[in-house]
Amino acid sequence: MMVYVYAYLSTLAVFLPCDMVWLGTMASRLYRPTLGNILLSDANLPAAAAFYGIYPVGLVFFAVVPALKSGSLGRATLSGALFGFFTYMTYDLTNQATLKNWTTQLTLVDIGWGTLLGAIAATGAFWVTSKITA
Image 1 (cartoon, rainbow, N blue to C red):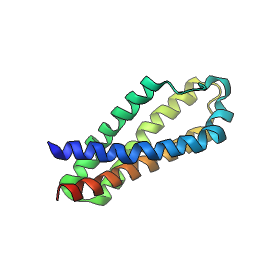
Image 2: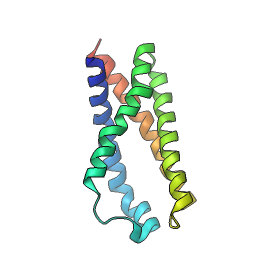
Image 3: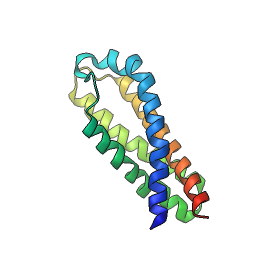
């Protein structure tokens, strides 16, 4: 049971600060110029808290724990990247299909970020959790 707790906390500890740096850097450079007035001036904190609380559960379930069971850092990286790719792709392509301001460039950049972020978070969580539980 504790392996799940450690995996979740370590995933969150990697995922959240990485995404905060990305958003802090890219909000004014990419998102705001593209999305304009449809972007909120301040984040919806309850929705953001829900996302950051839940998303790492998916990474733990689909990437970190299976990799821990197989003992494979590479599996953590690949599974985390794939999880990030498919989840961000779903979000971005849905937005592109329904929002007139959403661009192909934004879709591609955001999917790339989600893929990289999933890989980084799962890899870091695998490494930390495997050290703590060894």
